[in-house]
Image (cartoon, rainbow, N blue to C red):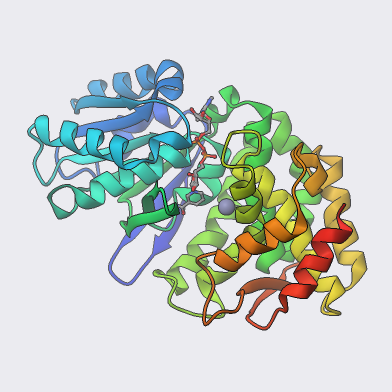
Length: 369
Ligand code: NAD
Ligand code: ZN
């Protein structure tokens, strides 16, 4: 049987099943939680070519009737147009309120299919089968779903918790190394926020995660999901201003600014921006006298050893400090006109601060080149 990480919320509980070969057994694993022997799988073209046949075969074996909706790969599918296509297709299939939507794919598919599941008939049962490392360790757990609009990323969405998450390390075998590194940044983030043991585990095992060792990958996914389950269980709807889910934004204020400046054109993956953002959050904390420089150096050494991007220069595009700072000012995490930042006292001890002078941020960014 797969190992399970339990996510326990006030109105819901579900398991994240973690292990190898789970998609090939998805029918049997999901039968106990599916309200009906009928599902609709939402996936993208890339994942459909690689993994959809395995999933459909396993569902068919257990007598589960499955149809599929396939969208183009990439962030562009988190659009109102694509959302409309998916919801129209779901309704055209004549589904019932007990028909489950299964997201088979990365965070894009999870967010898109999850929001469709949240919206159609005011809520269909939803299953996540994350196929990227990022989705397995982060986006598939916690119930945030949504799409982008011309006003910005993830501005249209809903909380809709899955009834089960199936994280199969076999999926990761086909994932490009760049995507693997991007997902790894979110594992690292978990350690840096509140789990120094996880960071040490990363120092010892990060290379094996990226090299594709399935047992080590499963361990990484379990550790990261256990961390996220704890945070989400404590603050399901991001209502706590200073701890809880807000801490998951460590490195993300910088990351979002970098991504926005790069216009989401694919040259910089979200996880790559997060890796750089994590280090910038440590460097900013050092500058403000809140964190020892040795901790920031240790984070940087780890990122470098694994071949991750560490500086704004690594983005391969000249980004001005003032333009980045301006993006941060517009970040939706702003409260009362001040940038709300997640900073660190040390590795494994993050906290939020709303009193960061933008001059400190600009000086840091300028010092970066
Ligand atoms: P993604 O879904 O675009 O996947 C990355 C690429 O990998 C895509 O081209 C996809 O087709 C391909 N791919 C997926 N699985 C594969 C596999 N097994 N083998 C080969 N190729 C595969 O991107 P992502 O990094 O998984 O997710 C990013 C998205 O997640 C962003 O939109 C972000 O906003 C969202 N996100 C959501 C949450 C949340 O809590 N809901 C958290 C973090 C990120
Ligand atoms: Zn992230």
